[in-house]
Length: 262
Image (cartoon, rainbow, N blue to C red; front, side, top):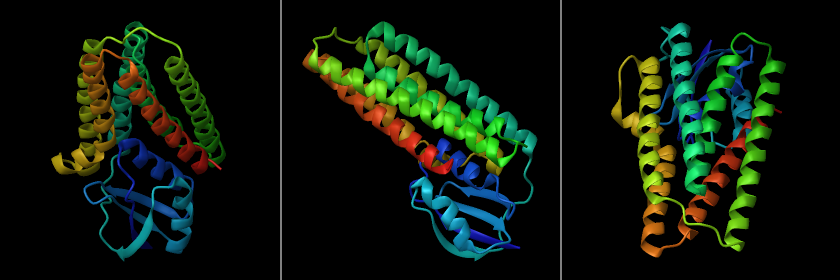
Protein backbone atom coordinates (compact mmCIF):
# COMPACT_ATOMS: atom_id res chain seq x y z
CA UNK A 1 0.00 0.00 0.00
CA UNK A 2 1.32 3.44 -0.96
CA UNK A 3 0.45 6.86 0.44
CA UNK A 4 1.00 9.57 -2.16
CA UNK A 5 0.94 13.31 -1.55
CA UNK A 6 -0.66 15.48 -4.24
CA UNK A 7 -0.47 19.27 -4.24
CA UNK A 8 -3.71 20.87 -5.46
CA UNK A 9 -3.03 24.64 -5.80
CA UNK A 10 -6.57 25.57 -6.89
CA UNK A 11 -8.32 23.75 -4.00
CA UNK A 12 -9.69 26.94 -2.47
CA UNK A 13 -13.00 25.92 -0.95
CA UNK A 14 -14.89 23.10 0.69
CA UNK A 15 -16.79 22.27 -2.49
CA UNK A 16 -13.53 21.67 -4.35
CA UNK A 17 -12.39 19.29 -1.61
CA UNK A 18 -15.61 17.35 -2.15
CA UNK A 19 -14.96 17.29 -5.90
CA UNK A 20 -11.57 15.68 -5.29
CA UNK A 21 -13.16 13.15 -2.95
CA UNK A 22 -15.91 12.30 -5.44
CA UNK A 23 -13.44 11.94 -8.32
CA UNK A 24 -11.62 9.20 -6.38
CA UNK A 25 -14.44 7.69 -4.35
CA UNK A 26 -15.44 5.06 -6.90
CA UNK A 27 -11.93 3.70 -7.40
CA UNK A 28 -11.20 0.26 -5.97
CA UNK A 29 -7.48 1.07 -5.83
CA UNK A 30 -7.97 4.02 -3.43
CA UNK A 31 -8.34 3.11 0.25
CA UNK A 32 -8.36 6.47 2.03
CA UNK A 33 -8.13 10.22 1.38
CA UNK A 34 -6.95 12.91 3.82
CA UNK A 35 -6.84 16.66 3.19
CA UNK A 36 -4.20 19.14 4.40
CA UNK A 37 -6.01 22.39 3.58
CA UNK A 38 -3.30 24.57 5.11
CA UNK A 39 -0.84 23.46 2.44
CA UNK A 40 -3.47 22.52 -0.18
CA UNK A 41 -2.26 18.93 -0.20
CA UNK A 42 -4.16 15.66 -0.49
CA UNK A 43 -2.83 12.39 0.99
CA UNK A 44 -4.13 9.35 -0.88
CA UNK A 45 -3.62 5.79 0.33
CA UNK A 46 -3.74 3.49 -2.71
CA UNK A 47 -2.38 0.34 -4.31
CA UNK A 48 -1.76 1.55 -7.86
CA UNK A 49 0.60 3.82 -9.76
CA UNK A 50 0.48 7.48 -8.64
CA UNK A 51 0.20 8.49 -12.30
CA UNK A 52 -3.23 6.86 -12.55
CA UNK A 53 -4.39 8.92 -9.56
CA UNK A 54 -3.05 12.06 -11.24
CA UNK A 55 -4.98 11.14 -14.41
CA UNK A 56 -8.20 10.88 -12.37
CA UNK A 57 -7.66 14.32 -10.82
CA UNK A 58 -6.56 16.10 -14.00
CA UNK A 59 -10.12 16.64 -15.47
CA UNK A 60 -11.06 18.70 -12.39
CA UNK A 61 -8.76 21.49 -13.57
CA UNK A 62 -7.40 22.15 -10.07
CA UNK A 63 -3.73 21.75 -11.04
CA UNK A 64 -3.18 18.56 -8.99
CA UNK A 65 0.34 17.12 -9.20
CA UNK A 66 2.11 14.23 -7.47
CA UNK A 67 4.68 15.52 -4.96
CA UNK A 68 6.02 12.48 -3.13
CA UNK A 69 5.14 9.31 -1.26
CA UNK A 70 4.82 9.19 2.51
CA UNK A 71 3.65 6.91 5.30
CA UNK A 72 1.85 9.66 7.23
CA UNK A 73 -1.91 9.35 7.02
CA UNK A 74 -4.54 9.47 9.72
CA UNK A 75 -6.49 6.23 9.80
CA UNK A 76 -8.83 7.27 12.61
CA UNK A 77 -11.63 8.54 10.41
CA UNK A 78 -15.18 8.60 11.67
CA UNK A 79 -17.72 8.30 8.85
CA UNK A 80 -20.61 9.12 11.21
CA UNK A 81 -19.04 12.45 12.19
CA UNK A 82 -18.25 13.19 8.55
CA UNK A 83 -21.87 12.56 7.58
CA UNK A 84 -23.08 14.85 10.38
CA UNK A 85 -20.69 17.60 9.28
CA UNK A 86 -21.87 17.30 5.67
CA UNK A 87 -25.50 17.56 6.82
CA UNK A 88 -24.69 20.72 8.80
CA UNK A 89 -22.85 22.19 5.80
CA UNK A 90 -25.78 21.31 3.53
CA UNK A 91 -28.35 22.94 5.86
CA UNK A 92 -26.32 26.15 6.21
CA UNK A 93 -25.64 26.52 2.49
CA UNK A 94 -29.18 25.56 1.45
CA UNK A 95 -30.62 28.00 3.99
CA UNK A 96 -28.53 30.89 2.71
CA UNK A 97 -29.36 29.91 -0.86
CA UNK A 98 -33.08 30.37 -0.13
CA UNK A 99 -32.54 33.50 1.99
CA UNK A 100 -30.22 35.30 -0.43
CA UNK A 101 -32.32 34.36 -3.44
CA UNK A 102 -35.49 35.68 -1.78
CA UNK A 103 -33.93 38.95 -0.63
CA UNK A 104 -32.06 39.31 -3.94
CA UNK A 105 -35.31 39.09 -5.91
CA UNK A 106 -37.09 41.52 -3.56
CA UNK A 107 -34.21 44.02 -3.51
CA UNK A 108 -33.47 43.65 -7.27
CA UNK A 109 -29.83 42.73 -6.60
CA UNK A 110 -28.12 40.49 -9.17
CA UNK A 111 -25.13 40.28 -6.84
CA UNK A 112 -27.22 38.68 -4.10
CA UNK A 113 -28.96 36.37 -6.58
CA UNK A 114 -25.59 35.25 -7.94
CA UNK A 115 -24.19 34.77 -4.43
CA UNK A 116 -27.28 32.68 -3.63
CA UNK A 117 -26.51 30.48 -6.63
CA UNK A 118 -22.92 30.12 -5.41
CA UNK A 119 -24.22 28.94 -2.02
CA UNK A 120 -26.66 26.63 -3.80
CA UNK A 121 -23.81 25.17 -5.84
CA UNK A 122 -21.89 24.36 -2.64
CA UNK A 123 -25.05 22.86 -1.14
CA UNK A 124 -25.51 20.62 -4.18
CA UNK A 125 -21.96 19.28 -3.81
CA UNK A 126 -22.58 18.45 -0.13
CA UNK A 127 -25.88 16.81 -1.07
CA UNK A 128 -24.13 14.79 -3.76
CA UNK A 129 -21.51 13.65 -1.27
CA UNK A 130 -24.26 12.44 1.07
CA UNK A 131 -26.34 10.82 -1.66
CA UNK A 132 -23.34 9.03 -3.15
CA UNK A 133 -22.31 7.28 0.08
CA UNK A 134 -22.45 3.52 -0.48
CA UNK A 135 -23.80 3.78 -4.04
CA UNK A 136 -22.40 2.45 -7.29
CA UNK A 137 -19.93 4.52 -9.27
CA UNK A 138 -22.33 4.91 -12.20
CA UNK A 139 -25.03 6.44 -9.96
CA UNK A 140 -22.51 8.82 -8.40
CA UNK A 141 -21.53 10.08 -11.84
CA UNK A 142 -25.17 10.48 -12.89
CA UNK A 143 -25.91 12.54 -9.77
CA UNK A 144 -22.85 14.70 -10.38
CA UNK A 145 -23.77 15.19 -14.04
CA UNK A 146 -27.31 16.32 -13.18
CA UNK A 147 -25.97 18.79 -10.62
CA UNK A 148 -23.43 20.14 -13.11
CA UNK A 149 -26.01 20.71 -15.83
CA UNK A 150 -28.45 22.38 -13.42
CA UNK A 151 -25.75 24.74 -12.13
CA UNK A 152 -24.57 25.53 -15.65
CA UNK A 153 -28.13 26.28 -16.81
CA UNK A 154 -28.82 28.57 -13.84
CA UNK A 155 -25.52 30.40 -14.36
CA UNK A 156 -26.35 30.88 -18.05
CA UNK A 157 -29.80 32.27 -17.21
CA UNK A 158 -28.20 34.60 -14.67
CA UNK A 159 -25.64 35.90 -17.16
CA UNK A 160 -28.38 36.53 -19.73
CA UNK A 161 -30.36 38.49 -17.12
CA UNK A 162 -27.27 40.54 -16.23
CA UNK A 163 -26.82 41.45 -19.92
CA UNK A 164 -30.52 42.32 -20.22
CA UNK A 165 -30.31 44.64 -17.24
CA UNK A 166 -27.25 46.32 -18.73
CA UNK A 167 -29.27 47.09 -21.86
CA UNK A 168 -32.60 47.98 -20.23
CA UNK A 169 -32.86 50.54 -17.44
CA UNK A 170 -33.71 48.78 -14.18
CA UNK A 171 -34.39 49.90 -10.63
CA UNK A 172 -31.52 50.37 -8.23
CA UNK A 173 -30.87 47.43 -5.89
CA UNK A 174 -31.15 47.97 -2.14
CA UNK A 175 -27.53 48.29 -0.90
CA UNK A 176 -28.48 47.79 2.76
CA UNK A 177 -29.97 44.37 2.02
CA UNK A 178 -26.90 43.46 -0.02
CA UNK A 179 -24.52 44.30 2.83
CA UNK A 180 -26.54 42.63 5.59
CA UNK A 181 -27.08 39.37 3.70
CA UNK A 182 -23.46 39.21 2.52
CA UNK A 183 -22.16 39.62 6.07
CA UNK A 184 -24.51 36.88 7.28
CA UNK A 185 -23.47 34.61 4.38
CA UNK A 186 -19.82 35.18 5.24
CA UNK A 187 -20.53 34.09 8.82
CA UNK A 188 -22.33 31.01 7.49
CA UNK A 189 -19.38 30.10 5.27
CA UNK A 190 -16.96 30.35 8.18
CA UNK A 191 -19.18 28.17 10.41
CA UNK A 192 -19.43 25.58 7.63
CA UNK A 193 -15.71 25.32 7.13
CA UNK A 194 -14.97 25.26 10.87
CA UNK A 195 -17.36 22.31 11.23
CA UNK A 196 -15.71 20.48 8.32
CA UNK A 197 -12.25 21.23 9.68
CA UNK A 198 -13.16 19.82 13.11
CA UNK A 199 -14.11 16.53 11.53
CA UNK A 200 -11.00 16.45 9.42
CA UNK A 201 -8.42 17.16 12.13
CA UNK A 202 -10.14 17.07 15.53
CA UNK A 203 -9.37 20.73 16.17
CA UNK A 204 -9.81 24.07 14.49
CA UNK A 205 -6.83 25.42 12.53
CA UNK A 206 -7.65 29.06 11.82
CA UNK A 207 -5.07 29.46 9.08
CA UNK A 208 -6.41 26.46 7.21
CA UNK A 209 -9.98 27.69 7.61
CA UNK A 210 -9.14 31.09 6.14
CA UNK A 211 -7.33 29.50 3.18
CA UNK A 212 -10.27 27.17 2.63
CA UNK A 213 -12.77 30.06 2.83
CA UNK A 214 -10.81 32.27 0.42
CA UNK A 215 -13.14 32.09 -2.58
CA UNK A 216 -16.34 32.46 -0.55
CA UNK A 217 -14.88 35.46 1.30
CA UNK A 218 -14.03 37.07 -2.03
CA UNK A 219 -17.56 36.52 -3.30
CA UNK A 220 -19.13 38.01 -0.16
CA UNK A 221 -16.69 40.93 -0.24
CA UNK A 222 -17.48 41.51 -3.91
CA UNK A 223 -21.19 41.89 -3.16
CA UNK A 224 -20.45 44.29 -0.29
CA UNK A 225 -18.15 46.33 -2.56
CA UNK A 226 -20.90 46.37 -5.19
CA UNK A 227 -23.38 47.69 -2.62
CA UNK A 228 -20.95 50.50 -1.75
CA UNK A 229 -20.59 51.20 -5.48
CA UNK A 230 -24.37 51.43 -5.87
CA UNK A 231 -24.43 54.06 -3.10
CA UNK A 232 -21.42 55.98 -4.41
CA UNK A 233 -22.45 56.13 -8.07
CA UNK A 234 -26.24 55.91 -7.70
CA UNK A 235 -26.12 53.20 -10.35
CA UNK A 236 -26.95 49.50 -10.67
CA UNK A 237 -23.82 48.85 -12.75
CA UNK A 238 -21.57 47.77 -9.81
CA UNK A 239 -24.20 45.24 -8.77
CA UNK A 240 -24.50 43.92 -12.33
CA UNK A 241 -20.72 43.56 -12.64
CA UNK A 242 -20.58 41.64 -9.36
CA UNK A 243 -23.44 39.39 -10.44
CA UNK A 244 -21.80 38.64 -13.79
CA UNK A 245 -18.47 37.73 -12.17
CA UNK A 246 -20.10 35.42 -9.61
CA UNK A 247 -22.23 33.71 -12.25
CA UNK A 248 -19.01 33.07 -14.20
CA UNK A 249 -17.45 31.48 -11.08
CA UNK A 250 -20.50 29.21 -10.67
CA UNK A 251 -20.37 28.24 -14.37
CA UNK A 252 -16.71 27.30 -13.99
CA UNK A 253 -17.56 25.15 -10.96
CA UNK A 254 -20.27 23.41 -13.01
CA UNK A 255 -17.69 22.75 -15.73
CA UNK A 256 -15.44 21.03 -13.20
CA UNK A 257 -18.30 18.85 -11.96
CA UNK A 258 -19.17 17.82 -15.53
CA UNK A 259 -15.53 17.03 -16.28
CA UNK A 260 -15.34 14.88 -13.14
CA UNK A 261 -18.56 12.99 -14.03
CA UNK A 262 -17.45 11.76 -17.46
